[in-house]
Image 1 (cartoon, rainbow, N blue to C red):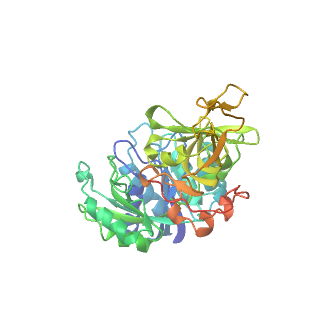
Image 2 (cartoon, rainbow, N blue to C red):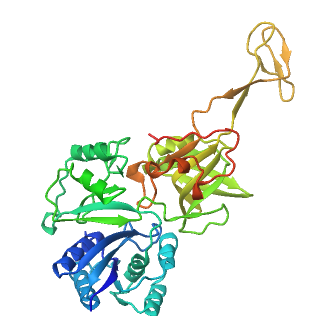
Image 3 (cartoon, rainbow, N blue to C red):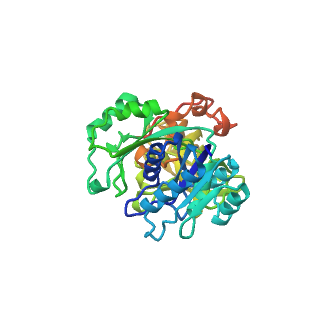
Length: 436
């Protein structure tokens, strides 16, 4: 019996080189060869803070028209052939659902945590086909991928090298910069110009040759046409929740949970300090609570922005809450505290700078004996402007929404969860540029 279904697969990766998205591309090709219609391929990024995960915590889902029994058998055979089940942390899961699963499970998996037992209970209750391998933990991601409903969607085209060529990865550097020149801002994060780094070519032993992220299949294919590389063995364009901030929850200081990611507003409560390794930290406060915010060394020039904050600045921060800190992905400067400086005044009689006469005694001129009770007060110019700032592409998480995707209303903080009701004393908003 022919029907339309979703096939979800997760946790086939291993440090030795396997990749779930590669398995998805191979499965899509094999399904088409068997006469099935594959109408959609989804790359579903889940909570980046889950302890048991691969680097990008990605599951895949294919929308397929065909015989459900045959599709399930082919998906399981593909996993059994390609997944590296010899790796201790590789525990694949396969789900084939002929009707939609509750999207709430996907939302929990991308913003929080789900257990294998919860995934199995959902699959049993919905009466879908599934198979877990080893401890079956991949059923969580497979179920989340099948239940995924994206409120915002981007695209990634992934090219893969053959198993025989896993020892080399040849991609012409200049062609990647050319692709970015030709298609930005419709594609993004192929390169990190500020740090002169190619971002879209990994250095891990997995099958991925390169990946191009963009707003549509048309744009990623346009960028792909510029790239010169060794011949890929297979390519696949996925619709994805990457670059959408799907992992962020509205939060408040003092009420955040470990391992979740938040958008939080507050007031800078301490001067940013640079610690060992180049990491920069400051305290953010609101309503009697405070939290440490961290800009780690890989965020490079973003730390320059963070170092310019001063106590009293109003900001919104986005990032994951781990071990008592918010690990910054981006921030919005809403209001800037005036920098007031004081120093001894100039003597009105002789024109020379006075010195302190002692605590509570004002100032005295050592040359002519003149006195004054008031210091010289001035307002220093802030070099930081109000607006959004983000980490560079080389440090960006898969789910983090780059500023190039923000609408003008979002950049101004006037839409949805990016709304800040009080922008303080500046009286105007300026869009922060990409930090360099």
